[in-house]
Image (tube, rainbow, N blue to C red; front, side):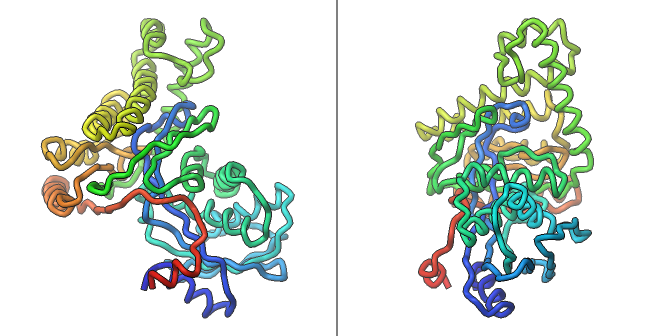
Length: 392
């Protein structure tokens, strides 16, 4: 039984009416890491793993949620939004909270959701839940909220109600993603451009270190501060510089003697990563995966050596791919200190490469490396009845 049919069946058994069916995808980031909070560029894509929703309006102010993957229910009312110790309801209540704060008139609703995005792998299941519900409620209550406003609303739900200071990339690609394309997002202006990534012969494969991000939160805040320190030094002489996005490599080099070595090192990575991303987009436009893959390896080197957010497990997984012709590129993805590497691998070699690297990883670290195979898919959308019936 496919996932959307399963979610629909659970919904009908619980509520005995016809729901709206919505698919809300996870995401990957091809290149452009730790550039978002420096107002640079990112290059995410929606993937073919998703959270599926069955949602319908109620006539009262009660909201009934059911998390199918956890087999857990949660109810709340529109006039009493209180954080839950269960944690997962907060991502959904946060969306309702933002809709109410924005002055939208909504009733209660019934909602069943579940999916196949691996939790904790950095594929952004949280944004899929937030943006997916925001999209669904926009539909069932006919709110006429535009796509960018939905993105901002979903981000604020996580910032303000869940309490996670995330950037806008995850919710943005969830709503704006298109099949066969990555999305180059300018994190300063929020302008975006579709960049083709429509290869039938390759898969995007994640090797999960299964290492907990124990340092990720504190080091993330430290990196932000280090980048900010560099900007302050440059801004004293160039008032128009408000972020590292405004800094070229040549300009940064003129300030090398005026910065602490570590500050310069952090800024150097971010400035170079923005340049790499723009080169990577040009490579994809001419279907040059070899150049794109080489840039991915350079990004990992920068993240490991200059930004220092990698770990031995991530470095090992990337290094092991370098001499395999079927692997175009690999790098760590996400905040760092654990999590996944992203790898571009030819389809026919995915199984053999995954098996070989997993075996070596187990021998080296006595820990399993989980493997997730994905393709690029479309953004959040309604699953029409005909489509659902055809894939049952």
